[in-house]
Image (cartoon, rainbow, N blue to C red; front, side):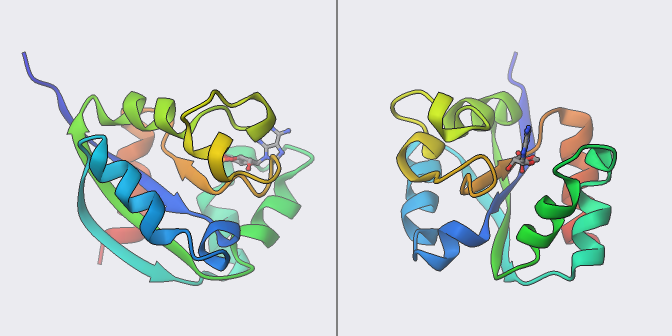
Length: 136
Ligand code: CMP
């Protein structure tokens, strides 16, 4: 049975700054993801705080929100069979040092903060995150 899902992907400021936007989109497309919608935006820190609210008790929360709002990002809706897990596998581990060969974070990530991409961690959160950026 087919299980087409949508997930939210963000190309983070470190990757946009290094002009990696097109390279990363090509990786997604080559792996069979369709980009259903996308926009390049810069968000306020208050919006980043809302987006990452699940992390509000974590010691890295403030830096994380500062960082996500520090420069332009590209937000995308990706669609594919089992897109949520597929995107997580393609991104690789949160810390680029732990990411496997062939993953986006292994190839482009600089540090656990500047890890180039974000992806939804569950189908439920994907819906919430897609709505966050694309519900008008
Ligand atoms: P992301 O997938 O966007 O989700 C939350 C982000 O917090 C994560 O990627 C990392 O960039 C960042 N982060 C910073 N420190 C940590 C940490 N110790 N554990 C997990 N995520 C962290």
